Image (spheres, rainbow, N blue to C red):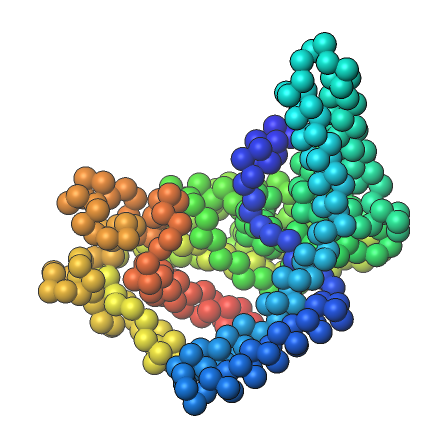
Length: 376
């Protein structure tokens, strides 16, 4: 709760609200009228200012439905915003009266009345938001502020009808691998890619997954080569060995709610890492032919230099820094972690970083695909 409170105070969110229902008729009518006027204006200006007319036509063609989405969002949030506006007005009037009058003034008694009334409105909204599953109060769930307040207290909304807005967030705070929906379906084969921040290969994401699976009594994992072996040794062997980028686990599902037992499954885990003795150079940007064809082998691609191919010596990707500009590394003094374990402080990787990460992923996936074919 303390962490959630801190995140709420600094307004830090890992997702956004998504509207489940389609736009209403009124926003669609307003949008069609506005687009019709823009198209008519563009046709009038086509002979005199063809460039401006083309820009207007591009706006109507490339930005369709943004007007209806904006107007629908305004109409959704307006009813829930009215109580907050009333509370703000009451507080503003109360503070104004209290600040412009003396203590002995006859109108000074209005100050606590307005202030307490505004605070009561806030308190009433907060209490009623936990009863929004009733039909007459469901309009409160259209307010992002109320939904943030409910998430702060870990309140789970339950009703016969879903809320108009759903909060879609990054699952990294709970389970970054995204394998639990697949395990709950008891699938026979699951492929998971782990690119979380783990430069020392502690396998923390998989360890957390094992704990959650045990807590939910969902399944257990084992080594197909030696089912009696503890998973701790399996993770240690993978971390110590540098000749493979994936490992293969077996899945033993627990009986479902109806008592039926699903057959054992397979889990192929791909981990982002550089293999032992990797001396591949930094590659250039991806091309369309490469994306449509078979990924090239290590080193069988156009290389890039320290200055993105501007005449510098070719650099090995194991020494590739995470800065947007190599000059910012000050000759290696401020380089930080190297490829592929860039520091999380840089959340804006360049296209060159992306191309090399894609190349590494393709190289590590080749043995995994071959292993999957051999176990069919």
